[in-house]
Length: 427
Ligand SMILES: [Cu+2]
Image (cartoon, rainbow, N blue to C red; front, side):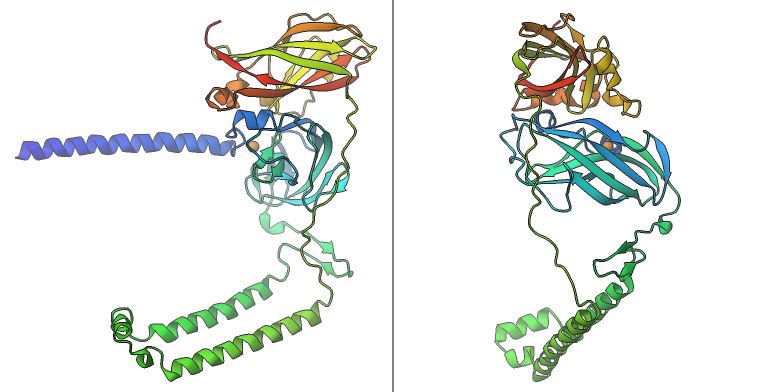
């Protein structure tokens, strides 16, 4: 009997230990992801065929330390991919903002092609928009800061991010504004908080008193029996009715009074705006300059290499070279094109730029009018670390990327490339 009991206990102990270690592993995985705050969790097809962010610049360097109240500016371009995934809404309602771990920055201003983005807007697929996001540091800590566009039904699509260390004291945060009527508000963050607390307290007291009025009497079973007997006069007494009536009158009078004093104090109020801002569709300045056709694409898993066979026609009158291949915020740059190398700024997050050069099967420039078939090879561990390898588990095994071409003068031409992608495990 005892041996049976102890062996059972041992088995239970083993099981408990197993559960504990599994939980610990899950926790470790979860915290690992939390560091990246989710930008790697989106399906690769969502990240490759929706937004392509480029020329993204921050007014501070990666890992810089700033103080509470300091302002950071993010600028750059965002390209809405033509082959937008079928499963999500078209970007007819989008909102420009920022991705940070909580409200650690205050979003002061946002612009899309110079238009203030206080409200949402709609954009056209296949077009590039300039964005600008101005943030003010609020909560101290080490934060990963990205531009982000929320697309209705699709959620937030984030751009590249950098680390910003905010030093100082959160209590020192001040956001002062002057209203349209000229009233100066010293700090919007704490503006009228005592008033908010006062009114919450008033209504909480009313609510609690009302509950106490009912709770002071025998509850549940007794009242259930009264309901069963149909003794309504005992369930709701005349006193109950009087209290309820005076409460209703009291609440309505308070509401009218509160509304009047608010109107007196703030005679001009503007309601929250519900309409959408309009941004003109930008002209595609690269239209027709280069024709790109995906012939085949492969993802060689063990080597973390994406190889694209593409047919490229140069329709301009200057020879061009492939300088960069960019997808899901990861940049693969052709080291033998100086203009492309110049485009990689020092402040850009290192983990998003492949260490190795983008390999092109034929580096000789494509002459005006010429059509060339090129093998473009992008290798980097980032395919794995940025979790783009989960491409294979997707019901939509397709990719989308931007190709940057440079002509002899160093001018850039950008064209989309997209197609199906096939996984391979054998070299
Ligand atoms: Cu991040």
